Length: 370
Image 1 (cartoon, rainbow, N blue to C red):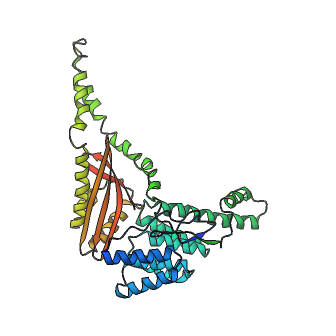
Image 2: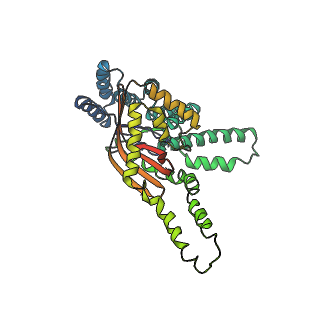
Image 3: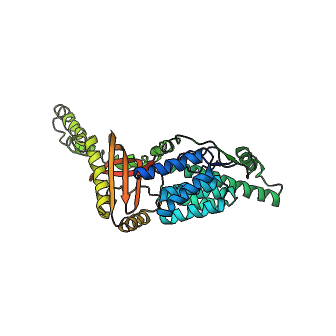
C-alpha cells in the first residue's frame, strides 16, 4: 500500500504495502516554456513505457542544469521504472539534501526502501516527509502501512519464541491486510491526472479546530458577565427586566461589527505572504496561532522557520484566486501560491485555516496540495 509520488504517472507497486500509487503529485514547479516542453516529453516517454529514453532525455537536460529539482525527480522515477533502485535511492537522497522542503522525494525513498524490506529506513524517510509537510496525507498512510509491516514481523517473532502466545489472531489480521508476497512489484499504467491528494486532508480540520473552540469560547463568556453586573440594582424588579435584554443584544452584535468579513481574513492572509516575502520573520511567525501544529514543538518549529527564511537570499510569495469562507470565529482561505526562493520556484494549491483572536485572524493549520 505504500504510494510512490509521481509527477503525473504511477511507476511501480509494492504489492503488500501498495494498493494505489498515483495518490499524490510532486508540487508543480514553475518553469519556462522550454523547461515545460522537456518535462512533458520525459513524462510522455515514461508513461508510454520508454523509461530508457526518458532517462537519456533527463540526463541530457541535467548536463546543462544539474540542480534542477523537477528533472532530477523525473530521473529518479525513470530509474525506478527500470528497476535500478540503488541509483534511484541515490538520486532521491540527493534531492532531499539539496531541497529538504520537498516531501515527495522522501516519500519515494520510503517506497524504494520498503521494496527492499528495509522498513526502518522507510519509516525514517516518511517521518521526514511528514515533518516537512505535516499535511501530507499520502505519507501518513504509507507510514501506517510500514508500521503494520513492522508489527507483522514482531508478531511472527513472538510466535516463533512462544507458540502459546496470544498474538496469532493479531498476526492473522495483518496478513489479511497484506496477503501478497512482499517482493511482488507490478508496473501500473500512467495516470494522466493525479488523484486529488489534498482531499484526504479534509478530515484533519475536524481534529485541529477542536481545540480552537475551547480557546475562542472563553471570549463569549465576557458578555454574560457584563449583563450580570447590569441587573445588580434589584430595587424596581418590574422595571429592570425590560432594560436588561437591551444590553444583552449589544454585546452579541459586537463580534460581527468588524474583522469578521472575508475581506478581513484575506487581508490577514496577504499580510502573512508579504511578511514572508520581506523575510520579516517576526511578522511572519505572529501570523500563526500559539497552538499551530507544525509537527513539532513551537520552539523547534520557530527555529526551523527562522533558519530557512534567513538562509534564502530572496523570497517571493504571490497568492492568486483567494477564496475565503467565514463561519463565526473560524475561517478557511484557499488559494494558489507561487513561491520563489533563490533558484527554487514552486507553484501549488494551499489552504489555511484561521481563527479570530483579540489581535485579529491567525493561522491554526495549513495544507498544501496540487
